[in-house]
Image (cartoon, rainbow, N blue to C red; front, side, top):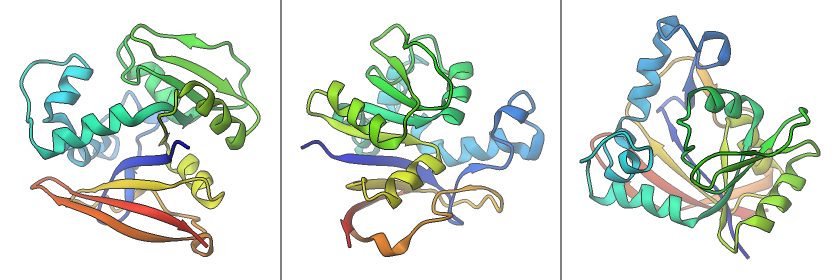
Length: 214
């Protein structure tokens, strides 16, 4: 059976998004300097050849181990699940050819028809919870893995429900001090973690964990 995983960047103090990175402040990058903070968190990604090619933002880029990490994550993903808040930001700022190229299942109370984008991405809007979204994602994934794209609340729901098999964290050598933490509200009684890979670079330490259910 396909695996359920997530892959995110995180600061040393546990944040995956800075304060102000929301629709209320989307047009004001100066608010708490959120855009600079987020760019610092994702610095390693922007330098990779695969990322630049996938988003069609230019030629060149690094082709080493971190580039391979991005490419393997993309290639293993047959469908994604995300929350409405993440989708709202992406709908506004993703390019016309959204970077997923698979089915994406959006957890929301909004009733909406599927939204097809160029390049093979179709967004489906799921109104009946995380189990339904995961089931529908498996149906279109073609045997590949399911990525829980975010945000933190959606990742936490799947972790606490015992539905995540493994995850990757790109731990950046920066701190935010405030923002959205990945593990706020985690139920530590539900699982144990095993580190199965650690890769170091100047911009992030890449950690892969397998989740063992208790």
